[in-house]
Amino acid sequence: MIVDFHVHSTASDGTLDPQDVAYRAKAFAAVALTDHDNTDGLAEFAEAGAELVESGRSDASFVTGLELSIEPGYGFDQFHLLALGIDPENAELKKLLGRVLAGRNERNKRIIAAFSRLGIEMDMDGLAACAHGEILARPHFARWLVERGYEKDISSAFARYLLPDSPAATRCYEERFHPPQEDVFRAVHSAGGLCIMAHPKYWRREWKRSGCDFAAAEREISRLKEAGLDGLEALYQANTPEENERFTRIAMKASLLTTAGSDFHGSNKPNIELGMEVDEMFVAPLFERLKIGVK
Image (cartoon, rainbow, N blue to C red):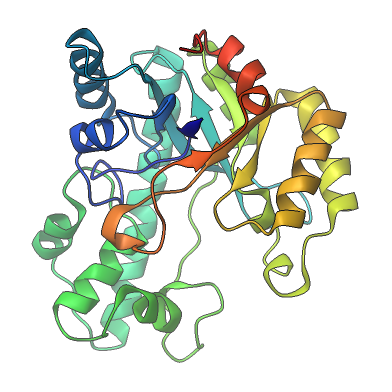
């Protein structure tokens, strides 16, 4: 079957509208919209999904979600959490997202100031046009640079300016607020959602060069299970076959749910296709927790 539990739209840094995501995935068994740090596209996504199902054009389950960048833990660099099956109107979740948005806005001011020091004056109207919605993220800065001729494409804009390891002379990367793990787990569970670690292969930057330290990952994931983690994105489009197998094994050993996600962003990441092929048994426990029936 085809599923995808990690998808972005124009509500954050993707290029398809939420409605178009639903239309594109109508033949899947299930799809989740998981925009960064906000739930703004979920109503449109859910409405489009409901219309497709009611009209008989789809048997898919359309899952409400989001992706949060949270405190990674000691010795780790990046922890992205997928919240699946959430109630977007939950008060505790909204409060958390308000804190995250304030942190993003403060970070963006520092990024703009860093570019100004390089003689690149960014205008907020232009950046807002790149962003489409309330969330302004690094891909929107990159797109602004490309559209104004500073870089040839988004990848080169990131490499030169927007990564933690961009060259010191041009680096405009700034860290932002990452909410504590326990706060996020509590808010997502309060909203009726599941806490799923996204792409664990990126948990430490050095793993991109040296490969994953699966023993370290297993130890910390076991701790996170006790703290409230519900599952692991064990199948990910950028994983090697070994990483898929090892992270699946780690999840099963810890009695965690397993999910599969593409991290689809539309033309912002043109090499990533929407949808992941999985065995039904791989996602059966997740489907049960999300109350998804296999059709």
